[in-house]
Image 1 (cartoon, rainbow, N blue to C red):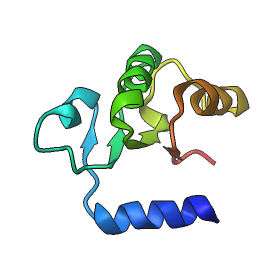
Image 2 (cartoon, rainbow, N blue to C red):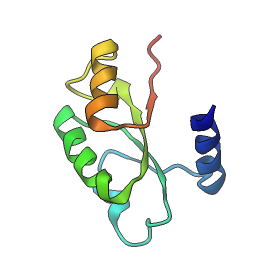
Image 3 (spheres, rainbow, N blue to C red):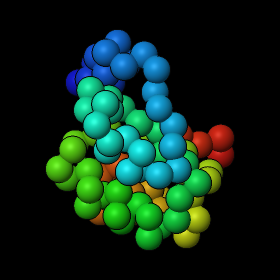
Image 4 (tube, one colour):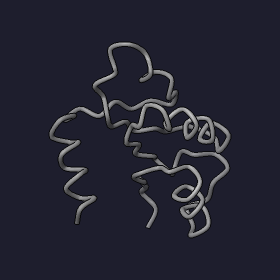
Length: 95
């Protein structure tokens, strides 16, 4: 329940969510106030770099898992994303 409240607060403050396939796009001046971002069309290697960079900027990341290369939408892929990449939210059209 706490995570839901946190997400609703982020959405209230950031009603428009930037979507990008390049995390560096939101690290430029002018995007400092953006706290929520949707990432898509990346590889597992890109995600490792995103995780490193996000330690400093602390953005909440929504990851479109359907467009990620090198990770499956199964219990192991999701566990890796949560444990090692610290991705906050997963979006998928898979059941």
